Amino acid sequence: MKNILAKILTVVFAASAMLSTNVFAANPASFTLNSSSYSVVNGDTFNVSIFENGDNVNVVTLKLAFDNTKLQLNSAICGSSFSGSQGEVNGVTCFTSGGTTVNGSILVANVSFKSLAGAGSSAISVASGSKIVTSGLNIWDQVGGSILINLITPTPAPAPVPTSTPASDTAGSTSMPVVAPTSTSQTLGNKAATPITTPVPEPVNPTDGTTQADPSNNTGSTLGVVDLKSSSKNDPVKSDSSNTVKFFDAVRIFLAIVVAAGVMAITYYYGLRSELTIQPVDKSFKKSKYHSKNRK
Image (tube, rainbow, N blue to C red; front, side, top):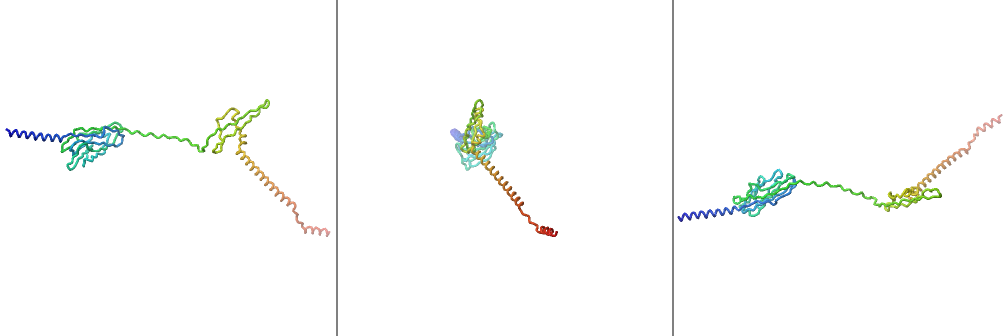
């Protein structure tokens, strides 16, 4: 009887020891993602990092769920704690080698996605079929988390607005007002005399020497009337030009008179010479005539 009781106790202790070992080995582990949401422009590429926090882990199989009409999985690269990898549909399997294990929060993989839509959203989550393995036992607690990807359309850049540059004053001169000449009307007896216009000198531009008129200075019917003849007489530039023209006209007239006089003198000289020229006497004719008279 005592032997039977001893055997039963031995079996119980052995079973309890095995149970305690399995419970320790089955310490649950979970997946986590590096962010809870992203906003992604259509056509952009972005990365998602996935971690696990198990103990004595040597193999991790990661599978992801997402809307493949809005997102495209480009690549999945295992973290540096794992020495090997194997491709999976929408995921990757990462493992250690040489009987080594990893503990604590470890980067499983960096996964690259590309946005295929410009509106709406898509969640990326750890899918069923994923595993966190230690000593051949899957200790994943089915907690994987997810990340929400908000898809947006890029805002077109506004078209540049052309800017107009004010025309520069190439002469660099400053406009100066011109005071219009004043005109007063004088009366002689009962008759109104012709209005006498008093020209006012026009201000001269200091840069180019030109005068500028002020069209806004108009003071009445007689005031503001510019006497063009008087202005031209008082303008030294115009006076010099007129004198030069008159001088050359006088020179041309003088030369024409000299040429005409020379022609007349030459004509007169040759005509007079032709009249004064003595014609030679035909002596033979006179002599024969004389002898004929004597013979008679």
